Structures are given as structure tokens and as C-alpha cells.
Image (tube, rainbow, N blue to C red; front, side, top):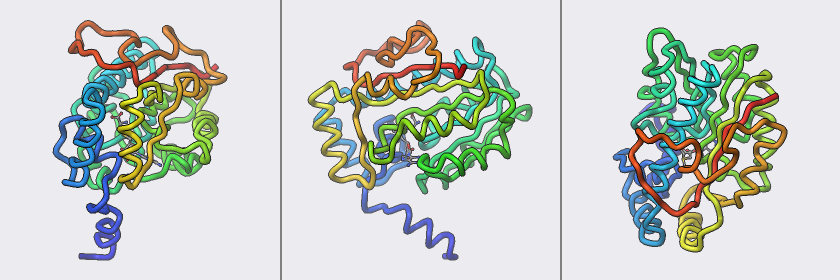
Length: 267
Ligand SMILES: C[S@@+](CC[C@H](N)C(=O)[O-])C[C@H]1O[C@@H](n2cnc3c(N)ncnc32)[C@H](O)[C@@H]1O
């Protein structure tokens, strides 16, 4: 093992659950360790609808990217808290409609880093890049993304299930504002996160927080709405994820309304 591999191995911490790996398990993926699936099962025992909620979140990503490319004319994406590669990653969704789309993925999980090649399968007309960075370092993210994205043209900042990873002490709204401050007028924010409105989910997340390397911070729908302050929300505003521009061609599935989302334009 060379030094880098040693370092990566230490960061992987296969003895403690990680957010990206537990999420992968809940989505039915195989890129996780027994500690992750065991905690995933605790979550599913406490709040059985969680797997459906995870799938609904991915479907919101697909609809939001579809709207951004088709209706808003966006061709550049900065996707923060990407997660492990799965079906319909952001670049696949965007490039299926506009092959010239350029995507920068950002995550700080070491396993996501080792799987990043699967996120870098850009169409020849477009570009994909991966930045191993923490969302709490917006200046570094913007500096590295500038190597791939043209910040004189609009960018969609996609933040799905990532602000919940950030405690109030780390000022999540300021992080969103700092990232948006680097993007030009006409850029967009698409964001979704879990809400604190369901007792069983609150208990499931409390169990997760006791065991995981990370903690998740469920917020009220109003707090999730406040991430869009200063932006022009597109209809229907900040709503429960399945209610955001439903697409009859997607599989129909219902679950408790425990994730809120929105898409908004920077004036
Ligand atoms: C719940 S998953 C969501 C994945 C994907 N966006 C989706 O919606 O399917 C949260 C992701 O955020 C990443 N993450 C957690 N804390 C982070 C941080 N401080 N900086 C960057 N990424 C982080 C995790 O590694 C994980 O991949």
C-alpha cells in the first residue's frame, strides 16, 4: 500500500457507518459495508417508508434537472453532496437532453472518491469533473469548479440531501449564499432535504446520529424554504418532493411527506 492508499483506507472507516454508504443501501445499491446496511436496517425498522422517500428524492433530482435543462436552458451544473454513483446521475439526466452539458460533482466521502470514475462518463460533447471537497469550504469548491464551469454563464447548484448534513453551528444558509454568490444572475438553486415533521423519522434519524460518522439535521419546511431567501422560486415553490411538478412518466409511489424541495432562480 502506498501512502495515498493508506490515507484513503484510514478515511474509509469501514467500522463506522457513513452517510453516502447508508444512502446507497437505502436506494438498493451494493456500494456499502455491513456497518452501513445494519444501520440502514435500523432506520427501515423504525421508519419503513425511508427507502421510498430515498427513491422519491432521486425522482425529484430527475425532474429538477429536466426542468433546468429543458425550460431554464441551463447547461452547467454544480452538484454538491453527489453520493455514490447510481442510476440517473446528474450528468446522465442533463446530457440525455443536452449532451453539451458540463457537470462538476462534489462530495467529501472517500468511497465516493474511489467510485468517481463512474461519475466521469461524460458525453463527448460535454464535460464531467469531480472535486473531493467539503461543502463547508465554498471558496475552494468555487475555485476548483471554475476549471470546468464558465462562471460568466448560468449554473445550476444542485444540493440534494446535503444541507441536512450540516449543523446550525456551521451556518448552512450562509454556505448556500456563499456558493450562490460565485454564480451569475440567471443561475439556479435546486435543493431538497428531510423534514422534522414525522415522529418515526425523527427517531430513525436519532438512531442514525448515534452511530454514524456523520449527523443528519432534520429541519422544518420553513427552515428548508429559508435556503431560497433572495431567489425567485419557480412554481410550485417549496413543497413536499413528490408534489414538485409531478411527471406521470415516472413510477408512481407515495410516502410520508418528510422531504421538502424547491427550485429557484438567482435574480
Ligand atoms: C443523503 S446523501 C445524498 C446523495 C445524493 N445527492 C442524492 O440525493 O441521492 C448525502 C451526500 O452528502 C455527502 N456529504 C455529507 N457531508 C458532506 C460535506 N460536509 N461535504 C460534502 N459532501 C458531504 C455524503 O458523502 C453523501 O454522499
